[in-house]
Image 1 (cartoon, rainbow, N blue to C red):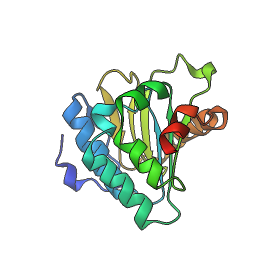
Image 2: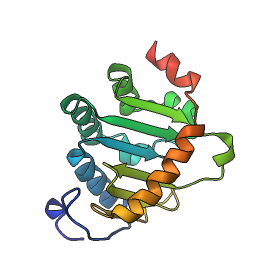
Image 3: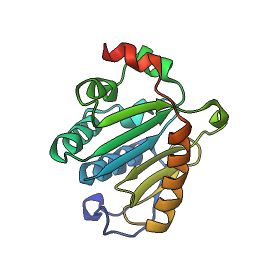
Length: 170
């Protein structure tokens, strides 16, 4: 992989192939830090190895606090597992609920096992198998990002708030 510091959200149109956990973490954090408007995530258990890091939580917090119109939307499939094990993003959701929304995927998507993150609807990280670290990323691919965003929006419309998360917020 090229030096990740050279990649700019909305500017660098170069396909990255990801194979390892460390690469996923590096690219996810770098992309999230540059996000200014929206962050959309689909992950079965909110992949703790990638999304439950201090650096990623700080990037999400920075987005919410620095950009007052920022919107962070997360779709998960197993909220009870996430609540049981804890997650840094749940703690942020408690404090920044007007910016961060987490919903449970509709049961009709139960076979969906991908993991994706979209940043400002222009950059993406996509793993076709959410249990593995192989995937692709691009900091500026409008065409593919639109496809993923459409898929996200369809799932978001059918997703629902989960009582497990409300308990955490009380």
